[in-house]
Amino acid sequence: RSNEVVESVTSNALQGIQRAQNGMQRNASNIARANQGDNTKDVTRSLVELNQHKNAGLASMKVLKATDEMLGSLLDVKA
Image (tube, rainbow, N blue to C red; front, top):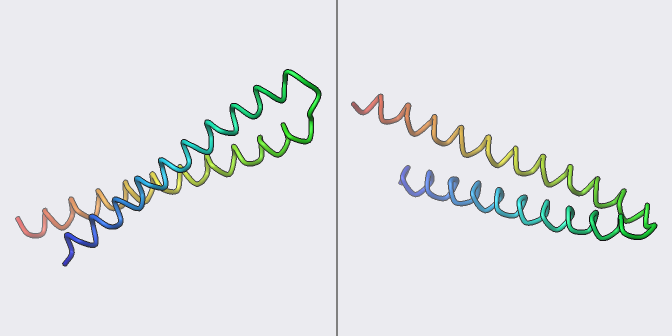
């Protein structure tokens, strides 16, 4: 059972990292395109969303790290 939980949490964390990366790439493209014109509103929105995606990615990485540390602790206890 604990193995299923670890796999689920790990999978969700990796999906969160992937979503954050995709969002950051999308926002970076929007910023690059907007800078070719005069679209301050779109740049501002994209910069805010870029920061949100960064924070979401960092949170997912922390979940992944905590899961790894928990699994290591469980293995130490069982050993």
